[in-house]
Amino acid sequence: MIREGNVGATPFCRAFTTAVVTNEAALPTYASMCTPAKITGISSACSCYVPAPTAGRRLGCNEDNCLRAMIREGGVSATPFCSQFIAATVTDPAVLPTYASMCTPNAIVGISSACSCI
Image (cartoon, rainbow, N blue to C red):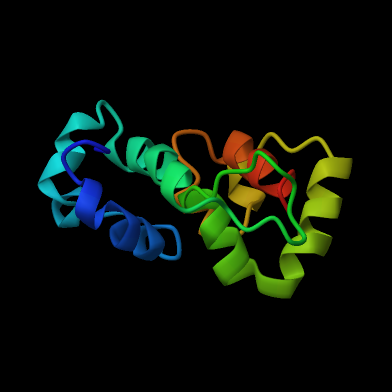
């Protein structure tokens, strides 16, 4: 991705890291190099171009689709939700907020990871 999309990578990554991307068909052609999980691969590569904001978040957190969905859809309620989630033992994904559908392949692991960044 870096070599082939170098000129357009930074603007693309700025847009990609602020949106929730689920449609791989909308990705640039150089994304085909990010296999097997294109969206995850692009998220990782974009973190090199556009570092995740650190104000209020822990260093080393990459804003994947799960974390972006939590920030966007969970908003101010994400922090109290995460406090409860981390204090409990959650094994049933049905109790998770609807935005947990962006946390693939394992919603519980994804939410746990995202909560560690909030």
